[in-house]
Image 1 (cartoon, rainbow, N blue to C red):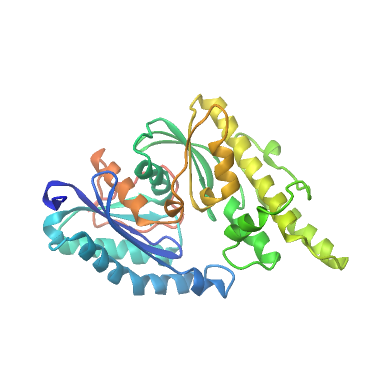
Image 2: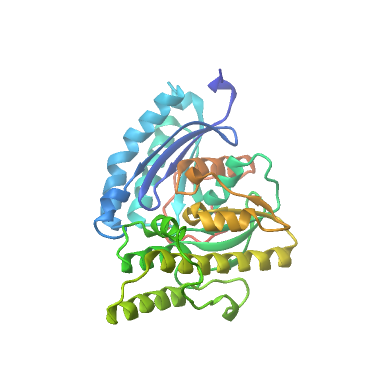
Length: 347
């Protein structure tokens, strides 16, 4: 039986987009309790996230979730037992971030414990740290989701080098927008993944933009537009879009782009430990391509850690606190927070 008085407890709060999540972590990676309130069904009717609606649902969910987490973990006196409150402060939707940050600050003030802001991307990186005790620095991490497509060289806690990022649409965003045009339900990425299993990846040819960009950057707007145009052409001719083949071809092009950039990053840095994170890290074709790549030491997070979650926020916050980063009640949400930007906020 774990004695809560003998370990450092971090309460993590994540509310950057459309999932409310709260978790309690003991030390660097032991999960004592973790809850998520998903808003997918609520937003599905609109075909995407409605920011104002999302923030209102965060407001309804966050306090009951926290109470459940504390009770489940056996925390009777948070003021004496919790060592840190870590919260996502950006990037994300302003209203959603505001709910999480203000809640975290309220708890910190009521319990007289420190509060620390966490960059959402740093959280995604730490999803792998939680899930893989043998993951050592340095390693490459590709964060791929509906809002992000980046390659980061992780030298240590707080020691990050952004090697490449998307110049327009993120990979997950392209998945969802193409799925919407195909008439598939939201979120479209997992649906495309399921349909692609039975399709022919060579049935359609889509443009590969990776070789037309500087450095290790990405662009998915051209692929998205070409895919949508192909769907429209078929429909204008009265033809039915072969969903399985179309999804397989589109997905294969996205995965190829991601893998090419990872290969280039490995050659550039000499680092062969490769981790992936974010919602697209749950894609079966992408996971298989990374896991089976010759010469890499791959780290794939469990699918439950691919979505936005408070475990990764708590882990990133704990690591930052242990490395000397400090924060305070002057913490404010920043929807356009740059990765690597100084997270230290004064009292």
